Image 1 (cartoon, rainbow, N blue to C red):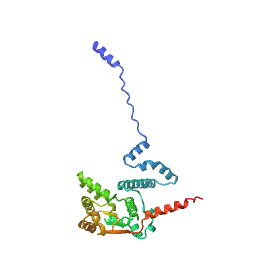
Image 2: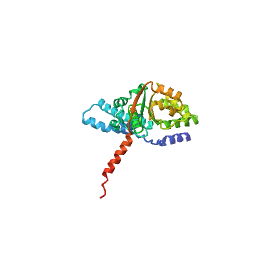
Image 3: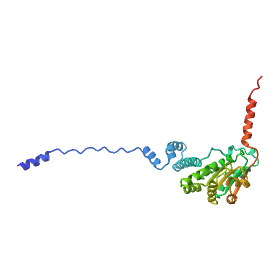
Image 4: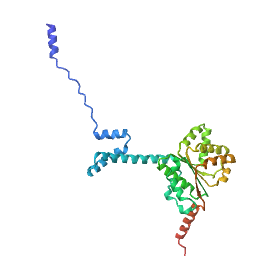
Length: 284
């Protein structure tokens, strides 16, 4: 009797309802698309796909051409960002292009050769460029312009002065990281060393500079500017043997730019002063 009552009571007991688990909210297609484009590192796609879609709809452009336009925009933006990174990594003292160089002011400079070098084929051939001439004739400007052109064409560039480079080399040697620094320099497709000859080098500094430039022989392009002719380079390096060995390597595959004449900077400064004096009205 008791067993029957117990069974009946269990059967009559109402089932306990299971807790309601909320269904996960599915992100919208737009949110998912922007998330995936971010993961794929396609920022231009993410910014432009809606605007380009509207343009293509108005122009009745099919899907392949719509995707082609997006790919072209992404590629152009990616190249622009890569160029900006190369320019920052080059450590230019200032940004200057060849467009702003006054070739008429330096008639000794071979303009055709400079424009040919701006195509950067010499970098691929691992050739050198030596720009020689008086102070103020635009050697640094030409070096900066050709360095900028190299960055814009996809080459890795490092710009430095001879004094700064020697200082870095000596410092790296003292801190026992010289080999690593030399490897970093060797990786640069174009190394620009400006103002060789303005500051005399110590024996250690000259030897370290010689080692860096020798390592680049037929392995990378080097651009050097100097205010001294070759027969006075011994004054910089302090050794005829070292100077001869360096010039032998630098001039084997070389393009020489001669910038002779009066200082362009002094001439421009004088011109500015003359114009300023003419604007001043004479006192009665």
